[in-house]
Amino acid sequence: MKTNLYSITAVTIVGALCLSLGSCSESAELGDGKYTVSLKPHKLSIESTGSTYLKSQTDDDGNFSGYTFECPTGGWQVTYGFKITAEETPWAFKGIPNWIKISPSTGSSSQNIEMVVEANTPTKTERTASITLESTDPEWEYSIPINMTQAAMSPVLYKETQFGNFSSEGETHDCTFSANFTPSIAYEGNDGNWITATIEENGKEYNHLPGYTLNVTTKPNEETTRRTGYVLLQYKGNTVGNCEVCQYGFTPYVSSISKTTLYMDKNGGTSTITYKANFKPTIQCEYMTDWGEASIDTDNSTITVTVQPYSGNGSRRLGYLYMMYKNKKIQTIDIYQYGY
Image (cartoon, rainbow, N blue to C red; front, side):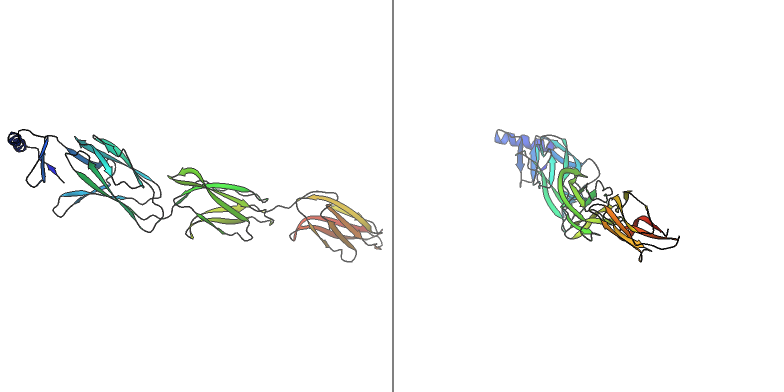
């Protein structure tokens, strides 16, 4: 590093040199070359314009030797501001890695600059860079080392949107999120594989991180209770975030039926009931074991009831026919048979 001396003595020395040599350039070296006397007031320095990030370093003799700059750990890129003071000194940054952008990276006078530090990908080790701010004036060689350190980064994920409830019929929803890694998918609460999911980059950014779209499809829920599962977003087998998938239970109902009460006389016989329903029912009889039976044709949505003759001498007997869904009674049909 060369240090400039600006004093009357320096000017006198330069004058003496000019007389002895017959001519004089704007700079000359004395002694062992550690000191340069120049007619130009060269100056080059850098300082933060925001919070203090640059930490000054000194050598064993207490002389300034450069700066260190520790990039905070974060899941997004960060922009820092700096002021370069330059007098009679064009300058340039050298040794800039691909994860740091400096704008502008060259100049010829004092100027404010921006340094953008990209988010680190998840890693177990920190990364470093040795950047120098250098004078590009061939008559004044000077450089300021800046040793950059970015801490090891953990996987980070931000959910932008959430799913709504899925219908019992099954459907596809999507949600968006951002992450500093490409997630893999696992599931929780997905017995029967009723959830399937895919991930794709969507070309957007959220929180300065690449954006992703998670597409989730559910199969029809044939149970009458709602169910909940989770899509796990993982990095190297470890779950970083999850998306809850809630699906309504199926609601079976009979929209129309030709008879909810069936009357039969003592002679017995057969009667047909027609219906419309959003499910394929089974049937179950109660109190009709000895005198009646029923069958169902779900393709034609008909129920056939057969009742035996009855000699009840004026009394009547009562049975019940239930339309069932997964062992639950959905519709009741009363069966009356008179003994007269």
